[in-house]
Length: 201
Image (cartoon, rainbow, N blue to C red; front, top):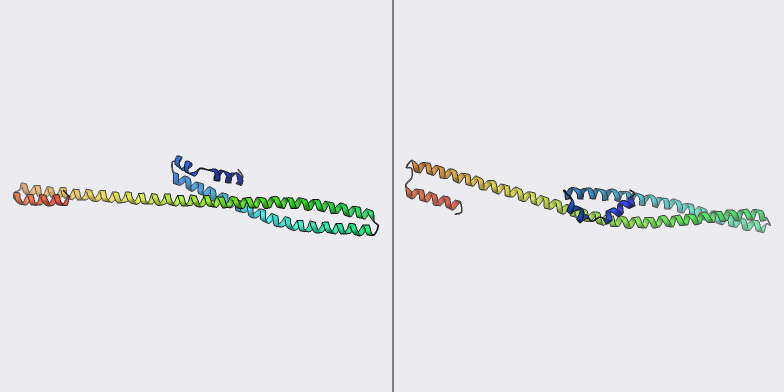
């Protein structure tokens, strides 16, 4: 698959739908971002290569245009000297140079159009890549919040269990003492009320 086809696939991709179907949306989004970054690098590399090629072709076009002018001047001089054969040869070379200049001009235009298209594609890809990175950051922040909330709930659960176990131990101690005549009924009731207060009852 060439870079342009990959770009089209990425731009046309419905990220929301793909993430909805994914077993691990965060992992899939990371893979999609990696694919976008790889495609971005290839597009920029291709664009830079074409721009360098354009510069080379423009130098060739300048040289060819100068050659065309020189052959035209030689043809004029040959005519002035009455050397028709030399004039014909010079005119033939001028026409060849003109055809080459036309070919180079067309190729340069094609490449420049391609570079402009590539720049537009890079800009669109940059936007989608930034959007995807923002989405990933949001997912990571949400996952971190959920993890923190789970840890808080777990701590609260353990604390409740510890308080309950402590209350049970206190009740056991009081019951043992009461059974051995260590407290009268009034003191037991006071202790029970205190336990209830601690338990929020």
